[in-house]
Image (cartoon, rainbow, N blue to C red; front, top):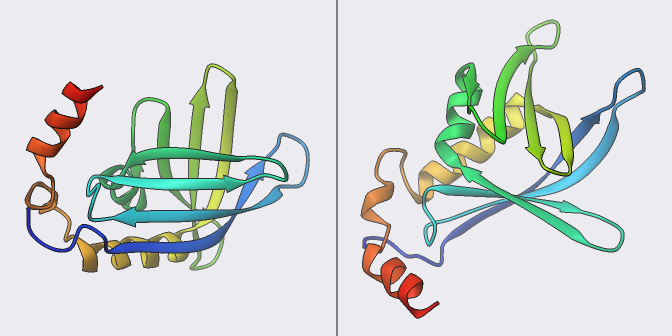
Length: 140
């Protein structure tokens, strides 16, 4: 494994929960990426009493910023928002329900570029310690 596994990128952005026939509801979330888990991005939703985290592939975010990414519970797509601005729609699905969230494409691109300074896209395998992962699974 190369690099420092403790290096992380943490940022806070505003997403907008899209609700049919109603104004979007602003949500403050934290985005986290680290070399210790080089394939994953964590989105943490801050609630008044509890926090909810979703973890998905960083390359899904990168694909979504280029057009569309994902086929399952998490899908990311970029859409024009009028003028030169683009927004990203992040669709989350679970047995408990479905949510569409809107984010600034520029903010997500800035976050993705920050993660690339920690682990360049396509080099994640150099930072992934498969032996430690297997040992962790066997210890469970």
